[in-house]
Image (cartoon, rainbow, N blue to C red; front, side):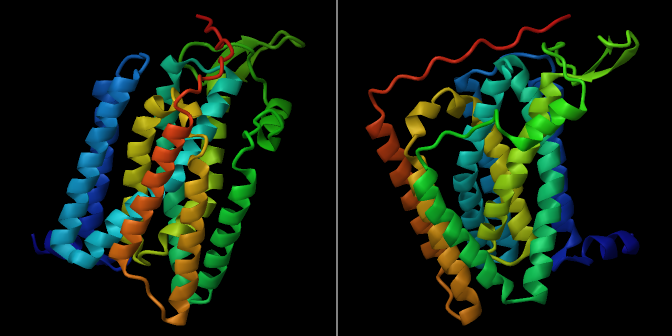
Length: 336
């Protein structure tokens, strides 16, 4: 009993272990509930269900944040909610690129949830690595915050210039490498990521990867690329790895649940990138000021982030109120 108590209250990255255990239990429970109960069979997720799932994930994230606030104090609670909102804001762009990947590869909506679900597992691992690396750098070299800040300001300013450009998947280097080095089927094979088929040249039965696995690899790549922006941005609020990681994962889980509602209305958010660019620049400036001893109040950061994001959403919705969605290409047909 004493051993268990000692283990629960032992320090891990500056936070008692039971906080980490509670977080891991909640995330694993959510994933099991999602795949084991809500989406046990393959089905197309409609916008209404997407909104309901998102509301559930937000409620759980806010309950967790309230617990952090109660157990660790108001400052930690504010930092969690601010980090959560920053990640939600910056990951919006991620969602639109993922939708472009699915459209280009012809992945039907009925199979998209499967790709997103398994993609989440990769996100959990990769974000842990990136945030752990970022925390180690910040603790060892305080000047690295100057680099983080300058990088985010540069990225935000660059986003202003490229906000009207559509992401290109066809010219993607990783996609070309996949097609060059792996056998890829032309059609889907149900929900399978790989399939055994005769090689057209030798006649031997070999393993092919399906467009579904190609989509999964591309989704993981997209998240990794966007994490380069969002992970340094979160360090503008806290440098506590627990707050950074938990707020990051909860935000991504919620936004992936909202994907099916957002994907159907991408054309209504074409001006949202401007507000995301502003958030990146402001966050970059905030990070840059930290080593100089100038700290901006967390509550003010939360208010500004909410205001800029809300302004971007409402302006985009108003500006595109008469726009119609572009026709989508026919999705791939699945072979039995």
